[in-house]
Length: 277
Ligand code: NDP
Image (cartoon, rainbow, N blue to C red; front, side, top):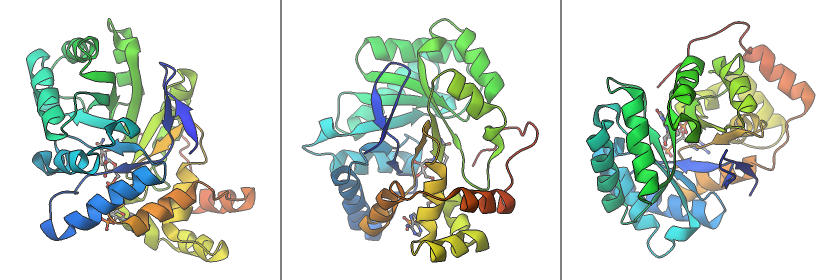
């Protein structure tokens, strides 16, 4: 598995698995567990979850999938902004640890900015790190000016990643946030890399899938993964989808096909405020 480095020097896989909407439907649970196990078996050991997902149900599913093999995984979870006070962050993290039946989270993110002063959340995250409840912390849905503000805070430079919406249809970050992250050697975690399935029906993606005798999901993921500093976390609810995602890492799109994708999904020419799902 190809890896990228967090600023702290830790290697993390560039391809993981997302869990939003997992653990919510009893009839899908078996497939979802199998998908998570398949991801681990195939080196996609970064698992992205959050207290928000299914109100804790996704974290419970992650805990079940990791039974007996916790140390193989790199768990990313998130605290909701309304819980991100000094005490609230610690309580939210402890509840997540309990649901996942683990004693540490590898990377704990502030899900998005809310009403709590950022300095207070950073303080709580630093405390969690020094107590060993989390290994690292980062943020999500932070635009370039938010990142500048974060890094100016005491402890702010300990942030390890920013998880944002990024795919062929949402290229705004290429204008400033992606270059900013590169300058700071901080990976960007691309969420919704398939635009929640919408991209899989786009004509240019379908054409290239045909040309490469592969699937639209693989074209879409191969494009996101072309950037060495981007980590993709597709939600793949079955082992079949997980295997497709894994295979995307070995797919190289030619410069001509990259240009065709640029014509169909133009890169930004000016600052675009960060989009969120
Ligand atoms: P994705 O772009 O990953 O798309 C997921 C959808 O694509 C699902 O419907 C899935 O189907 C389908 N799919 C996956 N693989 C294939 C395939 N090979 N062929 C056909 N369809 C496929 O959307 P998400 O919004 O889920 O984003 C991924 C992850 O990012 C989330 O699960 C979550 O962990 C994270 N996220 C973080 C956010 C944040 O604010 N920080 C916001 C949004 C997402 P199926 O359901 O059947 O598996």
